[in-house]
Image (cartoon, rainbow, N blue to C red; front, side, top):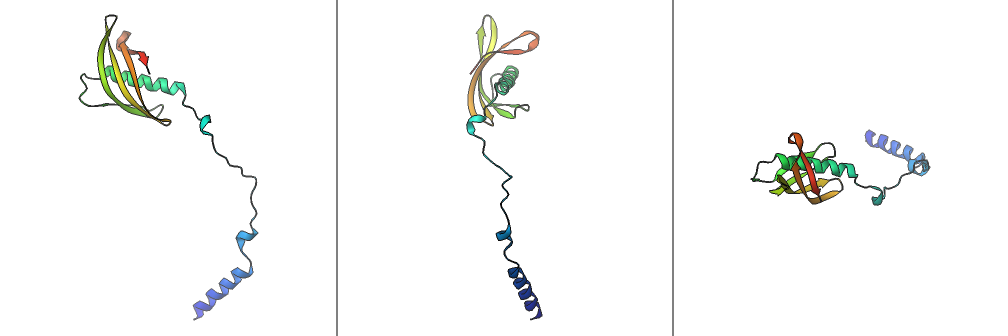
Length: 129
């Protein structure tokens, strides 16, 4: 009984002072907004770096591919899989055409490219779409 009386007094004291939310004022100094989707673009530099990562993976792949080959780029956060690699001959050089997926923060896409050996065992992109 005594506990109920204390609770009732506390409740009445809260009601007497009024609702705290009714006394609160709106802080108009804080301004928020949204970012328009058209203002966010995927930088060409990131796509170039991803293409180089795919090129390197396709160039180093053991052929024929037994299963899709994973690639990733820690600099851009993109990744995907190379699904097909075919060797072709371009001006007497053995090049490699590849198909790959690219998952980036702007979406998932399917790309294709062709890489050819360059000096020092490095590969260069001949085409990339």
